[in-house]
Image 1 (spheres, one colour):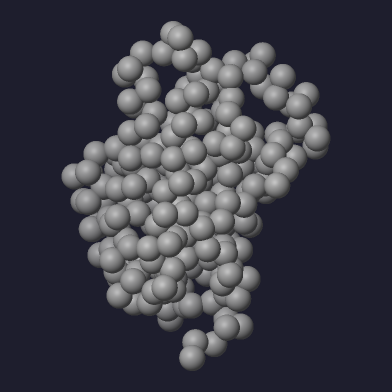
Image 2: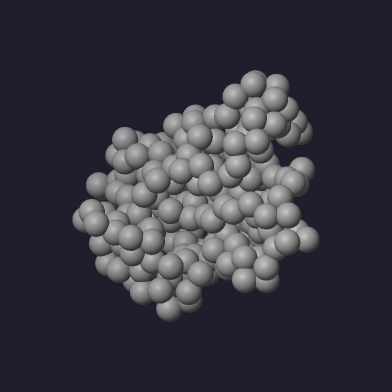
Amino acid sequence: MMEQNVQRRQPDGRGVIVTGGNSGIGRAIADAFRANGDRVIVLDRSGTDADVISVDVSQEDSVRAAFAAARERLGTIDVLVNSAGLLTESPLQDMTLARWNETLAVDLTGLFLCCREVVGEMREQKWGRIINIASQLAIKGGSGLSHYSAAKAGVIALTKSLALEVSGDNVLVNSIAPGPIETPLVEGISEDWKIAKRAELPLGRFGTAEEVAPTALLLASEPGGNLYVGQTLGPNSGDVMQ
């Protein structure tokens, strides 16, 4: 049997892919896995560093090519963190179909495409961890954010469904639903929205990306993450209590 008191580890660390890992929550998670001794490849819209590969997660061919390049560098993909995302603000009455489609394409379809790239090999090797970044708005909704909330609700549903399909092969799929976090993604939201949201939070403040990253490490760890199957963990400043 696999020893349960250590993490699965290649001689030079696990192979980890983090989408959207050039900024915000994704970057903090990528840094945390690096500090843990893992080998990390970031997939992002633009890549300038040796460990960053350019990708448009909404495009099937781009995703396929990026994962092929990452696989060549990593050898095996043990952990996938889907953090690439798009956040804009618009009342539903005024929302264009183009804005709706763009958000769903990046925040939900892109996640599906990335998951599909790794589940086969993870099942074959009988070990894998997939961590999807959702949002607390998937649970409670958000004024002016119906497109984003709907996409993130889809992320949670996809996470549960995929977990049912693959957990028998020791591939564990879970999601993290952060509350509002001080990241570049949130900078585009109106100041009025942010002031009102801070007033709602029991903690009274937005979180930081570095406060979310340890949850990803937990879900990918052994034995700490071994019993999480299709779960949604919520570092959200008390915005949603479950």
